[in-house]
Amino acid sequence: MQIFQEPIEYQDPLLCVKIWKLVNEGLEYPIEWIWHYHKEVEFLTVEQGILDVHTPGKVYRLKAGDSCVIGSSQLHFGRKIGTERLVYMVLHIDLHAYFNPAIQMYYRQFTEIDQPLDRLNYIMDENADAKREIAGILGEMHDEMQDKRSGFEIATSMLVIKLLLTLFRNDDRRTLNQEGSMDIPLLKEVISYINSHIGEKIELKQVCKLANMSYSYFSKYFKKMMGISFTDYVNRRKIQKAERLLLTQNMKVTEIAEAVGIENMAHFYELFKRYTGCKPKEYTAKLRPDPYIPLVKAQE
Image (cartoon, rainbow, N blue to C red; front, side):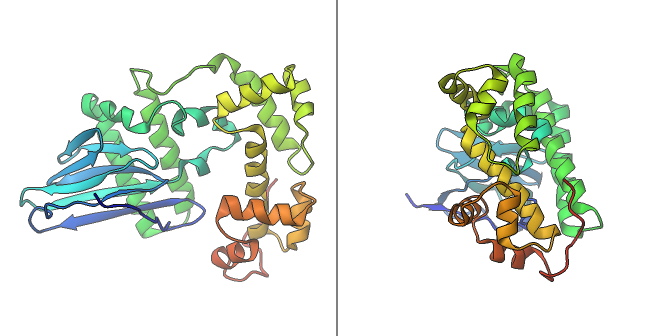
């Protein structure tokens, strides 16, 4: 069995999204299929024809109006059924990019710490209204990313959040684990503290005092609630701010590292490469037409 990791090239690196429409006029695909995977979550919706989406444990038969979701790094392949013209949309998205502080408490539910997202496909099978709404969201997102009208980034971001909300509110089986929801106020307070001190060296012991927990208990609590360690979360937030400064301010890399509270430049470069996949100058070259002119004024 052939297996390969499919590289996904985003249409906009900041949105971490790729969505496109495929049309197949021909016969059924050949007998041999290629299993593949990618770190991005995949949503599919069929406009015309029949598409079988295979995973190791299940086959989803999608007809016109049907949709399904494939979780991050889940093996899968698609197969056209019959000779009818097949038209369908495929969305690849890195959901990690969409969890800002306001919705960070839902990070665990959608990043497959507890359950693979394809467990939510029952929603599209059983709930006609939700299925229609999800197909509509993907259609709107496709149009926004193709037309790129003024503000398409805002529209696309809103549609991603709407997609997550639709799944969350229609999850009647509570597949999206809400364990620990009573601790959300405390979690908000911790996240607020991190965000307000992101330009400083944030010590775990300080946050433990804020949460009134021991060092070891808080470390386990944070990892359980967020799906990532405290240190990883803080570093992600620091690099996200560094990205924003690179795009909006005429600052040296050393100044940016200082502004996000990372004194060791080797450590800053290592973290930036880990979370963005490239070096700061490469990042700037990709996203700013003129590296000496800020695109917009930064907002803290």
